[in-house]
Image (cartoon, rainbow, N blue to C red; front, side, top):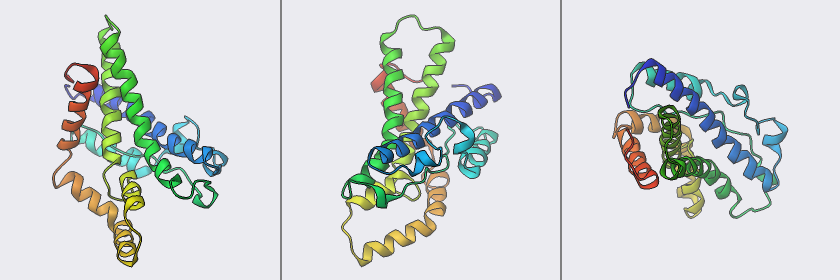
Length: 211
């Protein structure tokens, strides 16, 4: 895809709504498990203002646009969750953590199936579907990285055995996770691997390469 100011802005809009759906999925699953904190805070809404995180929603995506990055990533303000209210004490946290990436993946699958099976899509509509697919795949993959504050860290911690050593590891990652994530994504090994993996999944789902 040729990177232009127009495509970057359009991608930014799709990114915003995709990360909102991601957070709404977290809050909705938490609500279904007994915690209404996100709903009470009016976070189960498609109003973008309710979900803006200055760093993840504005600064980082705009920084990547300025750098003409191949992909634009980001995150929204996490929905508030009170895990004391969750009825499923064993798997509730895992279900909530998985909900965001899964929502993005399901959205990507729906639009990929439209590309695969709906004939004669207009070029504009095809482009919209294509961007929705690739960026929701990128968000799903990105958020499964097991580094705080991403969902993958919660999934990892849920499966690891409890103990003093793990508590120290969790404390360290929680404190320095953001800096580790920045190093991991932008310095080593870079963000290209996320895009390459998303492209491969796109090809599998849509039956044709991402262009």
